[in-house]
Length: 409
Image 1: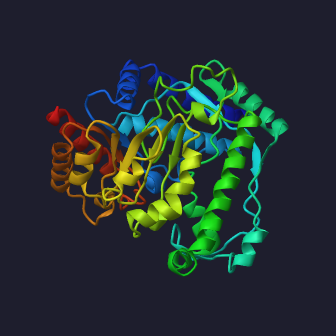
Image 2 (image 1 turned 120 degrees about the vertical axis):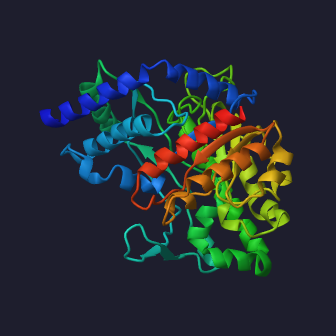
């Protein structure tokens, strides 16, 4: 039974979220996202995602609820309010509170041993469990099993707290990427993968095919169990941007969501240093059957893709391509033009530097907007693991981005 104090804290925050959601600007933002994802010309969209730096913007010390799960709900509400009050971006606040199905998902049968640095939010290395070809036989495809009783309890609690203020919805999200190579790096070791490309390419092909077939079975199982949810609205898709589109779901969807009613996403950050040909041979060809299942697709994250765009554009129904801080912005603009969303990820180092240089940020954004004139652009500030404990930097960065977008228009 939820404590009345916790219930009151969450209801008060929910009321503030509902007030924000009722602002007419939300409808205008939705309209612009729909047009943007349909590749219609318009001003670049802006999205600020503090990610790792959230701990400096909204530290755990601000939370007031006592129940552990409700503290997570509280943080989510506070983050939505904070973004509205501080960021001059285009993210939409809606009067919805989502609860996910409680599930248990197995791994691949072998698990890497992680070795942490001991530094808060510090780096780690790992001992990969697949030492030889024989170990491949020890792997098993992942499975997801729902706990409907626990899910019902969570939904009942959410309704008790938020009914009359926010609409409670069941919404599931089971993956961020279907890239495969990141999973294999954990199982085999990144350096060993690079060696396998030359010393034992057939083993690498066997492994990637096994992972591909395992993930295909897993997606089919999620679909058959009715566990998939649409991501065609105010849902984060790919490595940035939102899913607002009228092209999904498919016209023949009848209740149960299928992968073809959804946005899909893959990336290959772990092999940034390999050639386009090797990227296609060892990774992309195994991602393609997964991406083929989806109605629209996104590709890429932090890896520079400007020299690989010819192979990336083979992805079916590709709509959004990540242009990372390490990509050649001009080459990418010439390739993408207005045929794909140019999902630009500015360098987050400007937020983490010893001093925050507003002039440099302004020049950087202005230059990019000039380079990408004629493209369908979104500016996604992410991978910001610190703001040097000066949260106002995010406010300033998004204000500058907004001013430069308006100026360019």
